[in-house]
Image 1: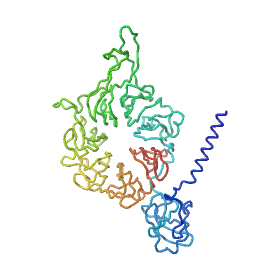
Image 2 (image 1 turned 90 degrees about the horizontal axis):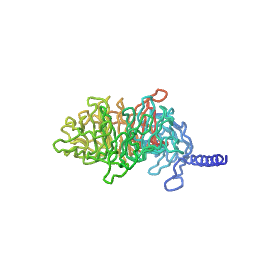
Image 3 (image 1 turned 180 degrees about the horizontal axis):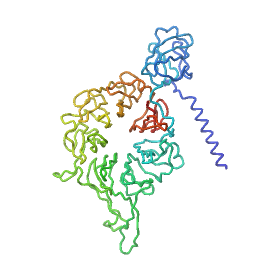
Image 4 (image 1 turned 45 degrees about the vertical axis):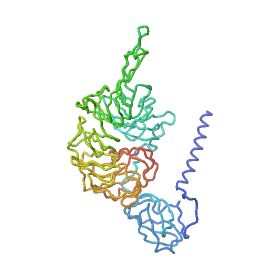
Length: 537
């Protein structure tokens, strides 16, 4: 009873602290309090009338001291200039501009700026109220898949999901129901002891990859890749390990999937009963459990390694497939890229089953390559992709293929593609040439690091930029197929962080929705912890 009372007291204190903090949500001035400039006053804690609305609506905000500067006033919604319709001794009336977004309001006279209350611009992208994971995760989400019964499996670097891992950690793998509610029936035990970057269905279970050496009760004999049963337990097999004649025989259990790599496993792709693996590795690792080492140590494990860089194919048991990307003439596996290499597999389209390779390399398998190329299903370079082009002049950080539009979308640090202007985001035709009907405009800030095209042609871009083509966008925007902002879809406020992927789905009430995950802390100027679902009209 005493422990219960203590818990209640602690929770009460924490709740009071959180309530107290909530009253101070508006950031303090960076240089401390100052005198009201020019005699203009505008209470930042007031609620505009109305408090939210669409572009074109008239908004009234209480303010004083404006009349002497009536002809000099400039009013902005989160950086976008608004039309002023009336100024009195006690208030100002303004019209929300077309590309206004949720955020703080300001009045300026020359270079003097007075901050006002926040205004919420109503747009066509909003958080899904039917998604029941409001606290998200406490670390990055790297991959989400749907199970056959409609539940969601997610992996990443998190140790908590929607505050359900406060007492017992949820280590890097979790399962939820379709509405986001945590599913405690997954038998993942202690989970993974390092980051999980991918999970795919495989042979009535799952393969998981990342940067880890243990899972649940297994703390050894895993090299960044292993297989799980459908219930989340690790798939193991009984082995009679080496024992000398004077030692008693026994059975020990080891991972059934006997294959892994010496470095990070980024992506896994099932392929006709086998699996293609991409990552930043150099050697394939396998183990022998029934052979002695030179000291004839009991239960010895012999590790074997074969050099194979960045991309490899394994048999269903984890052994290396020596027919994939093997150079017969050189009697070795091909060398891959001379920089960062990322891969995705073609899903749909005329190149189903082929692989896209992109990154920071300018050579691949010993020949020049402009940071992007396509591989055939057997791992050889597809010469039909961008046959006469030089590719990107700087690194590509994200690439997606849309089977509906049959276009590739790339984002990165490049400024040119095939020698033509391409400002950090570009659309490519299926043959790898630049789609010149799309033109990315100017970014203010560090630029985009994510771009993906939806099935209806809309292109979602995120990153560390503040404006796009002079319009305040604060890290998240929706473009049309020409590269222009789409009215109504760009009203969201501040986005802070990076997006790993966006998946088109449905809300619980059947409305069109997007599942967004990655490593972010804000969406539409509200707390958002790495994993959200939004409604898109």
